[in-house]
Amino acid sequence: MASGVNLNRNKPNWLLRGLVLFSLVIHFFIFLHVAGIYRSKALSYIELTMHEAVPVRDIPRPRHRPKPPPEARSAKPLPHELKPLPAIRPLKLEPVDRDLPETLVEKISPPQVPSAPLPAVTGWNPAPPVAAGHQYDTAQNYLEMVKNKIEREKKYPEAARIKQIEGTVTVSFTISTDGHIRQAAVAGTSGHEALDTAALNAVKAANPLPPPPARHFQGPLHLEIKIVFQLT
Image 1 (cartoon, one colour):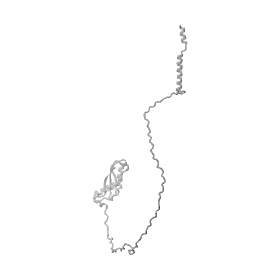
Image 2 (image 1 turned 180 degrees about the horizontal axis):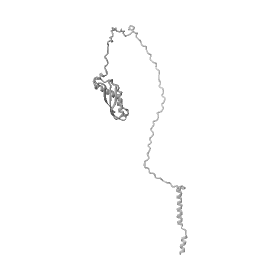
Image 3 (image 1 turned 90 degrees about the vertical axis):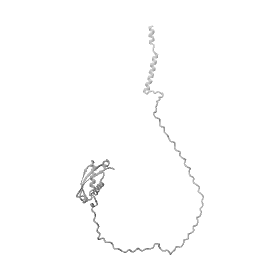
Image 4 (image 1 turned 135 degrees about the horizontal axis):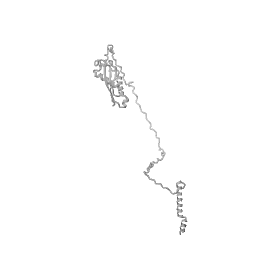
């Protein structure tokens, strides 16, 4: 009985060997496919998902071109007849009257004007010119003239205009008896050097001025004037 068991064990297991051999063949083909040596003829499908619709091009249709007009044919010449022109009769001119004067303008001699003696100008004495100071009736009129002349000489600095800088400068100066401006200086600054310099230059540019009227001012005239720089 023990010998029968040993005989079954010594027989080869063909089923197990067949499975192992089939497994080896499958793994061999998988290795060739991965290594790139063998490619299967089976088709591979890739699934694509469209997130946006593909724009459709709208191709305009060609415009309808009208057919070209047919070529113009030469027109047949119309029959025409040449008719003679009527004869022109000569006009009869009446004879010119010879009794008329040669000219229609009557000659008029110039009138005779009696000669008169010219007036003598040797005794004419013109009035002496009025002094400049006499045209200012009041002291206020003279001061207004000084202010207006300085205002005309005022020039806004370009750098201050660009930076939108405004201010008021007080300038003190003295007008001598002959009208010259002396001792001009900045008495009250605007806080900006460009405006202070422009105000001082305006006062100096107004020099000289008409002499102060002696009937309103005694000796040199000391003034302080405010020059305003304001953008409009």
